[in-house]
Figure 1 (spheres, rainbow, N blue to C red):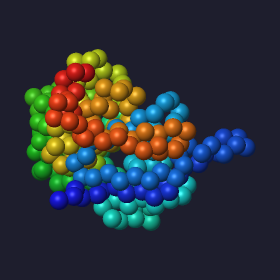
Figure 2: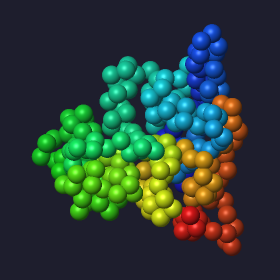
Figure 3: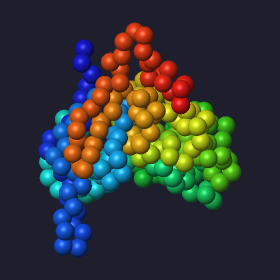
Figure 4: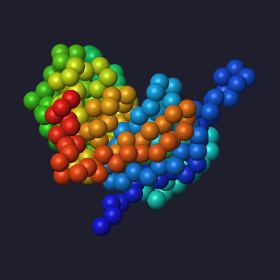
Length: 246
């Protein structure tokens, strides 16, 4: 059975004005992403990788095109409806984990639940469940500025998970991590995709792209196509094996 398509775009474009010049950062991108896929967006600096990710995350509105999420035209939503959609359906992980340094891990993870108006009595349970997915439930009441760099990024992933979103978007989420913590974070994202979360990552690291199901290549704002990393022969390494090679 084919997997459910949760993201579909057609002719998705984004333009900026820079002085008197029009910058075409994204040019008519056509994409399909299925539930449970782990997809890398790769390309040289300035190619439009982050622009595409931010458009998919409704952080930047596209100039034109169609964007369907689970078959719904979310570009027709009002700003308020899009904000609710982002908080409930999307989880974001950035290169800098952006945890509040003078707050506990619990307080950092509670913020998305407050915005979602989650029942106060259920918040700690949801937070512990999210932290448990990344192996950090024992750190729930620790100050975030006392965590290691790898732990902070894993806590940021847990924060992205706390509302049980359909889609996790990562912009260079391992960019500031050493090799060991990169391997841990990529493996945890891999595990999440196996649990049904859809994961889309911007990365410039070929090893991380190889650990994904699929790589979408982009250059000068143009989506060139994709490479299915799971179409490997029996003698080749699986994505999990590639993670171990990071």
